[in-house]
Image 1 (cartoon, rainbow, N blue to C red):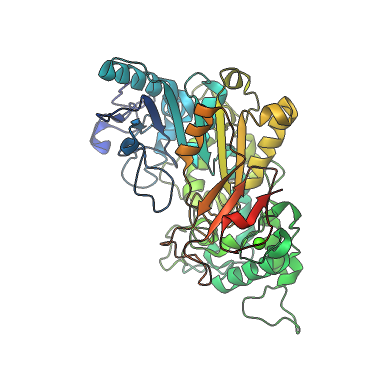
Image 2 (tube, rainbow, N blue to C red):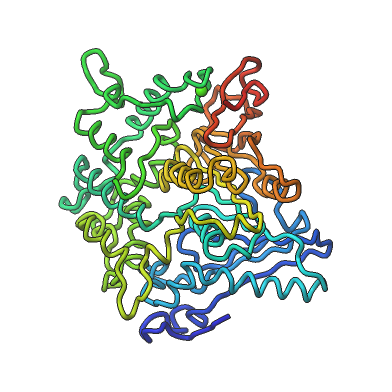
Length: 496
Ligand SMILES: [Ca+2]
């Protein structure tokens, strides 16, 4: 829909470079023969720009089923642009104002309404329930729907939602610069290589020290911290000294940086101290990347690549002018205050700021609440991309606006110890998001907790955990507490 062979500026994304009409909203619908009268809109993370299979894959590690197999009609979309080939190809839609608008939120009503029309035509019946599930950037999309298009969905589930992505990228810029201050230079002998800021031994040491102080606060030392509200980690425990000469201990400058990047920036939220930081899809992939072996090659950490390109080309107004620029250098040398100001900027060409287009942080859910809409949020306490404290901050805002009791009828937030960006880490990340929201909508009873299991294929699972471990995940602000019994079983915990 809305196909255009060129960007509005006439210069970007010709059909020759993208292999198709450069812009336009692609979508894919799958319709099961045995329809359960419900629909599933699949969010898409990152910078979108590709068309997923529309099976309604559930963000359930190891699960063999999907929404389609359960009888849901499913839609997926690229949100209006295709990833272009070449340098910064996934970010270059940001030079096109209409593509920014569609990616920001406009694709939601356009695709949802087309989906509804197709479903009605196919089954000669309007859908009885409509759900949206998305992770990361897809979570941001779901929250936009609750705030801007409250009639579209009966329930929205968001996992590790990047609902203040614009603000988060500035925290990322500060992280890059903080890490650079303790990094070695790369192979060009000039540019700091932030992959060297912390070694794997140091991350493992930090994870151990965090557990040492906070693991047992929930009643049991089981490698998971269920009481983040009571875990005021003392980072001086990491310091190398005569009494603490352990492998992986920290110098004082490293402790200072470690603490500051957990504290974050005032315009965003702090990060929790959680042992999941040492897992592959925690800090190593998001904040450090691989050690650079080729002069001039971009750092592979997401704060230096994915989030950097997103900020430079899709969020700030005006975007960085050279579409082939190295976004790592933008993060490394940029002025965070100046970049932050460009997130609220507009121009004649770009009439909508990044904050208005991309952030989804309005606590006004009046219309969504009036139609009995339900919002389920799940956030990993070791998510290195988007802060779990940003999700609790949002919950606190809703509690203030509606009162805790009324808010609990609209939204439930679940914090998952050890879980990284959606899945992975030393954690129980197997659970059924779709069943949770469907039960909530069909019964009207909000979930106070759910039982999660481990993914036996998760390489970050500690050796001494049972591969059938289950845990009780409690709705914020309650926290799981061990009450006695078999340590590997969720039934041995209660929400307090
Ligand atoms: Ca524990």
